[in-house]
Image 1 (cartoon, rainbow, N blue to C red):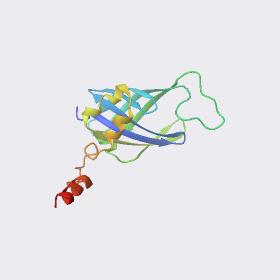
Image 2: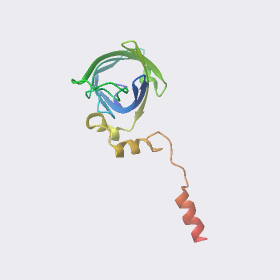
Image 3: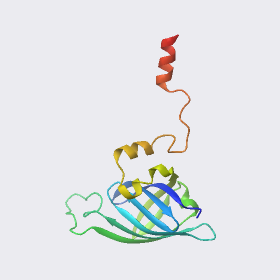
Image 4: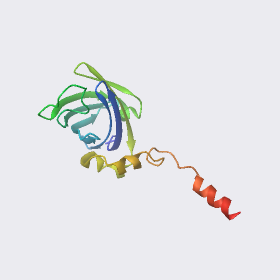
Length: 156
């Protein structure tokens, strides 16, 4: 399937913002965000390249962050998500998703498969730091780093 792979995503809505990783294998979708939210379900690509998502999101009690003066929920937050995404999940372009009369903006980008464990085990600070490297972002690292320049200057 053309959409099989590992993806990083960022999202922002009226209740907060976040980052996560998900994987698609066949039509199986599985992912986690940094706050411990789990996403499971299906991602099916149609003949036009659109991706039809049917997901269950389950997050920790109290959701992400709490608005000042509110108390956490006793049971984990659980939501059904049905969304049609464009080809390649938008390839990094912002996409607005309306859920329960709230709008969440999501950006998704394919990332190296070495980050796939974060989709099931969660994001550690080490994985998050590696995700922000030029190689993970699809760019080459600069040819000369400041350390190389310093070492070159000392040998002259």
